[in-house]
Amino acid sequence: MVKPQTPSAETPARPPQLKIEREAHKLEKRLCRLVGQAISDYQMIEAGDRVMVCMSGGKDSYGMLDILLKMQARAPVPFELIAVNLDQKQPGFPAEVLPNYLSQLGVKFHIETQDTYSIVKKNIPEGKTMCSLCSRLRRGILYRVARELGCNKIALGHHRDDILQTFFLNMFFGGKLKGMPAKLVSDNGEFVVIRPLAYVAEKDLARWATERAFPIIPCTLCGSQDNLQRQVVGEMLREWERKHPGRVENLFASLQNVVPSHLMDHAQFNFKDLQPTGLPNEDGDKAFDPETFPEPQALPGVSVVSLSEG
Ligand code: SF4
Image: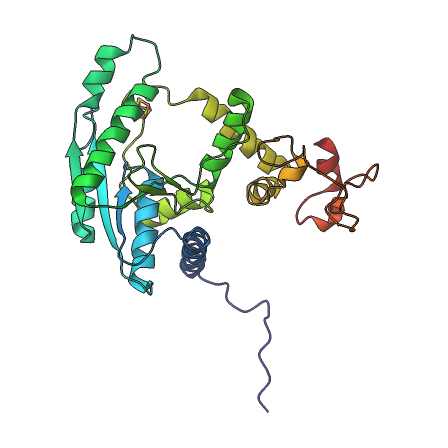
């Protein structure tokens, strides 16, 4: 009689290589699912679109192009992708890295060379932050390039953590409840700007970059200290996530679950003309009843101790 097989101590352990491949496959599936979901939720890409994919040479933009190419191959509607890099002539910028990578990939691309570095250096006193002039110049050039390439959409590689950081920076320093949009018309009114990685966690992009061995170009070439406040907020969020797993997911979910009647912006909700309706409403004011939240043990991976700490 043939006995059914049961795992035993003698069953050989799964070879590490196989395990790595399985993990990579799971990560790829997750990235595709999240990018697909964001594209669908915001109708980011439509038939006939010509999308300029902005490539900085950082892990996020490589990841964005990589996943968008996979989505394009299986998309039910045709659209075009054109990878664009702006070589700002920063000292030490390895100008051959992106063209080599993009040529090997066989994707349409354009490298725009503009020495904004010298302009910024000439106009910003030593020790002052160069980022605002630099990014203003970069934006103007990218709009022109998008126009010349006939693109109607511009894809940027900001991810979930960038969006949350922007949200907190706007609250802390701008007094605004405002994040970074997944899709919006450009400030000159000419293009639709999309962020297909809006649902993707930065740590997944870092893992994907290692998995795919992208030829990363360091982002410190300009010598500017890229937005110290953003780094501080980024660390704050990572610390929260370490101490309270799931908190970042909840924070991000809250950006998609806004209740204007329970905030204080009378431009978003007409408080002035409120009248009793005579009808019960679950979302109506509950007077002295406290808000109810899930029991600590109902939150996956969160201990009672860690919740009470926060
Ligand atoms: S970090 Fe450097 S390249 Fe980036 S915006 Fe600032 S000055 Fe420009």
